[in-house]
Image 1 (cartoon, helix red, strand yellow):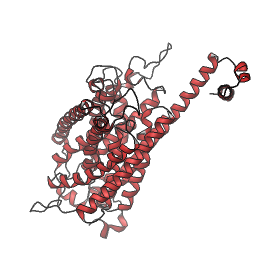
Image 2 (tube, one colour; image 1 turned 90 degrees about the horizontal axis):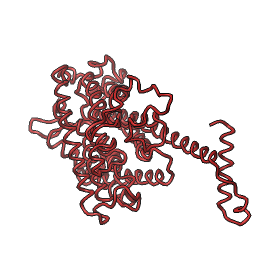
Image 3 (cartoon, rainbow, N blue to C red; image 1 turned 180 degrees about the vertical axis):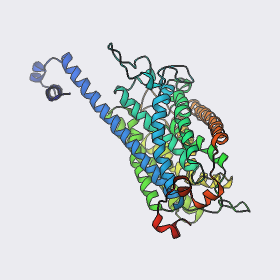
Image 4 (cartoon, one colour; image 1 turned 135 degrees about the horizontal axis):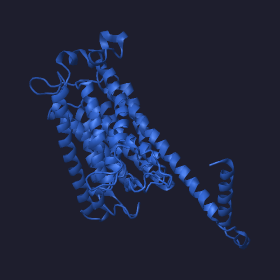
Length: 473
């Protein structure tokens, strides 16, 4: 929009505001609302919506830094380079996989299972016909968003990258770098978009009436289920469990970067959840920002209290993962619940994450960073929370009322079915993918490489070469 158009828009809005204040003189002299004024106002709204969607996409992209800091800090120094390399390369792989195949499978018109149109975007989807939009009638499931096509694509891409990043932490300190790269392409190119199509792309769960506003299931539990399959197939790290089966704690090497990473993720979540409006809808984005923040705060307190009670100390790693658990849990219901309900959801999530970490240790599923407890367990809980706490008055015409607001079990049943269906599909396909990769190139590094650290074995360098004497122990 050029300068003259912006001034015309400003003048039009000013006149309309003045005319709306009443008074006979104003009513008599109010100008006719012309088609040109309507066009200028519409263009201005599209510009604002586009800026909002892009800025929030940038915030979600920035969360990659948070994941890198959290995971590297919670792992040992001898594997820091490897963790950082995985968190860096995963978004590059995600960008290509989602561009080539994932976007079309997720949002392309097709059947209830997957999108069938608009696949392989590198094959010509950029060629807009002279008659209009090349994408109309191809990606109708996301036509509700009024921003330009590539703004929609970028926003959805950063979500896809997040799902793949979740896997990194659960398989840390023993997975081959190449194997992780191959799996990252599979999850973003196929697994994530198929189940995403079910819920966000016009698929069978969306038609059934399942709701997941910003991705507790679509993003977080998908990453969690895929991570669970990988962690089981890989087995625990050497020395994680003693001969008698008891847990031998393996402490992270840098809690400073871990805390920094969680603060980055908390900040980025203000793009993740409010940005899912995909429009600068002021009332909605403000309310969603508050429900998001309240859940994170309540979860932090819930995890602190639970860890203090069960472990005897307010364990920092539990406190930090508690915050993330609350953010994951509120991701699905953030637009549909009250601020009070978000506090309850968050507090419960903080309790769940501590209990879940202890549970996975008890069944000997080694998860170095607690990704399964944060993203899988609380992704499922957040999805069910929609069925419990949704209030129709908050966003009329969407979910209807949940169980605690007089809506009965109908919505909760649909949420449960969706969580189970996505979980079952993702776990089975992830198991098959990990198994195929294991057969082709192997999954786990050698015993010698694991003991020495993946930094030197996989990358030929160390994160802290000047402190080798004590940081790699």
